[in-house]
Length: 374
Ligand SMILES: *Cc1c(COP(=O)(O)O)cnc(C)c1O
Image (cartoon, rainbow, N blue to C red; front, side, top):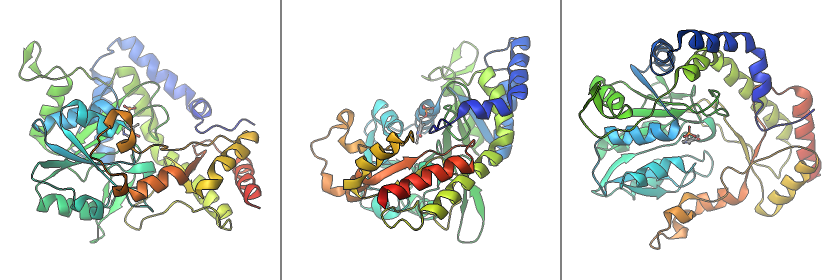
């Protein structure tokens, strides 16, 4: 039995007939760009998220870039991002000559919290990009409140949390990605809703904004060969859209399978005092894009090596905070501003989690972690 961080092959084999047929349909239609399959998937995702508009695009990074472009920010405007995230979130900000303002995260949820954002807001701050890291929502109610008080846009980077639900204090629930003015997501193959190549999407409720987003993702054109603004070329192609239409039907099942894996790990690792289990915030469901433990800094590498010996892969998401990446080097940044992120980069370790795990594999992984700390 081979253990992988993600098992895309066996997931595919279970829906092979449907997927192959969906791809064949696109081949028969030969409508590879735009057309009915893209439109259909956009509609289905819009229904799933309960967000009025969904616009497919080339990948999750483009989705963030297009979202920022649609807000018409000016050079030098500041955008708040967590420093504990994947690089894409901050990269597009810098690429557009906006200023990424990196903030620390909550040590338990790994997400942005108002406490960390508050003292980073200046007159130049225009937007906040919360990242729902590893599959759990950031504390959106308080972030929304803060954003309203300071007239800031919220773009939610929902690449890791599609399908997660946020519960407000009045018990109203909303899907992550639909709470801010714009939500973005990625269909990179290993994501919870992944296609078989690159893909991404942007969603919003505002009609004018949606039109602008569509225009920007298609060379800024309002109609063919009439260009109203500078845009980019970023499209979700029809083959990926057709695959996603099939996989979207299984998304809740996939999420459920991940939650069962997480519950199994939680139960079996609860007795191991040396590991800190993933936090579950009471305001969010957790779709477990990753199952991430915290362990003592001085035991992490040994644990990884021990598990690796036993053919159990692990990953460190993320080993280096964004503020310490060479690409974002800024001598004025003080490392002491990010104690939680610094700690997390030294202590997190993610175990294999995907939709195709069985109890035998899970038991083997859990027992091996326990064995290491015995
Ligand atoms: C995967 C990911 C992205 C980028 O998605 P791509 O499709 O790879 O461009 C952006 N943000 C986060 C948090 C991600 O996990």
